[in-house]
Image (cartoon, rainbow, N blue to C red):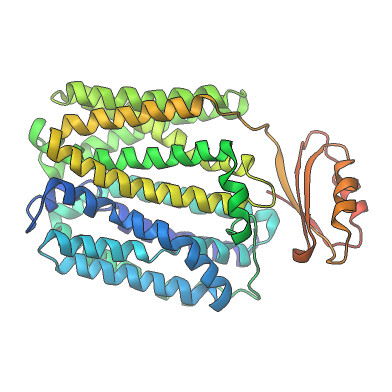
Length: 455
């Protein structure tokens, strides 16, 4: 990346990371806090925890489309302002319904699609994969930091203080947006990162993609349900004061990262993706079952959490990659949009279901339900076909080309397995085997055109 792209990417990643940190900070502490709010019930605790997922799922794709019309920055700024307003509403509320409203407003600032579109506007195709990976790493770090910082901040300033802090961070992010993020030269539709309205039918009819969408729905449903129960288990079953909860999460997360790395290496480098994928889903089921059976033992709880976060980290890293590889080459953005919507809906359903289970059956009911969800996912994923490891390439073409003819000529090149020409967008999308693909041959075929870009 050049200096302008680095500035854009790190600024956007910082805004995205701060926003996700704001959503995650209350995850490890909210259930204990909400238990003392006016009008609270276990179901409403879960609803308050997960309601942001509902509004985010409903609005993230429409906000992305709106940013194509009126500009990226106005939409992103409005989303961050909504997020800040929701945080203030939650901070000022003494009733569970007020917090639910605040969390719903937080989620309504659904800027994910608009942020990715802005990132695409400000980066060249050949560096876009790295740019998106930077944002992905930031989100992962936000989750990890939140599990440690949430309980510590709660002990210092309380959960209300966390909500106020989140509001301030959102307003600071607006400043970063306008002061540090460059203005794009022009707004373009980027099929590799944006949802295209006419492509939803094709994506929703793809059984392999649906398996992955169901998977991310269940994974985020499971983790949201777990955090309805875990704070109570640590405090009431294991007698660990809330301000000491980070000293449970920190070693668990560090050990989980150590074990995650070799599993990803085996999956990617040794060609064992499906085996590792199914193994990790099985680990989720085992971890939840352990929590159901032995949540009164510190050793068992810590062991179960290590298993869970090893699997969670691997699955969170591999699922987006699988979506990208399985999606039609000219509709990856639409596939990722459906995937993200499924993820947010999973958080909503998981929170609500976890709260209901806690009220009806206690923490054991939550853990048994999440174990059942994992077994359901294992059944769904068992029939999945893993994609062949191939690289995605974009090339620029002239708008007056004969798309059908050009596609046939490109497919005749060595190492090219898929090709789709979108003449009205001056783009051709390809999947190639880089071991035998000849870039010079493609460039010779497209010599009136500009350049190719790998992703």
